[in-house]
Image 1 (cartoon, rainbow, N blue to C red):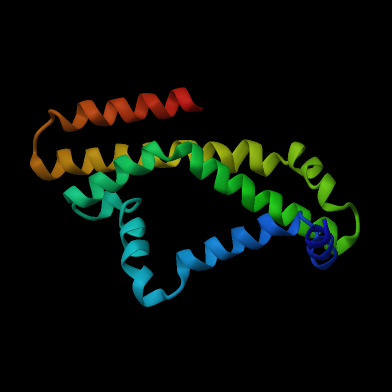
Image 2: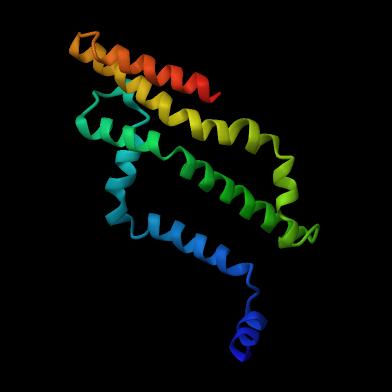
Length: 156
């Protein structure tokens, strides 16, 4: 109890997830010399219609289609943190009530979360169209493109 009291007097328990999140974000970016290749691969994947698609790009695209739910969680976390910080800065509400602006956020629920769901599917759709164009073959590329198009439509 003495340790809990000492820690909670220094920083409330609501601050620990915030600190952890910022540490993870910082680790994803720094040191840039070691992270540059990772971010460049993630940049090339959505730009598939403009560049030839390699095996690596297709593989990363497949992984991104499997990470839809974690992408939505990350987007929700950013919105939650900024809503909490906004409430803290304006003294409009405390961290216990930071979820209230998120419940009414049109941007989060109508734009960001659907974009997190559809974007990886759209990128794979574009990759398959580019592969069909480069290989001058319809099958299997257009079949896969149709699969990702239908999945995106169902997601919306």
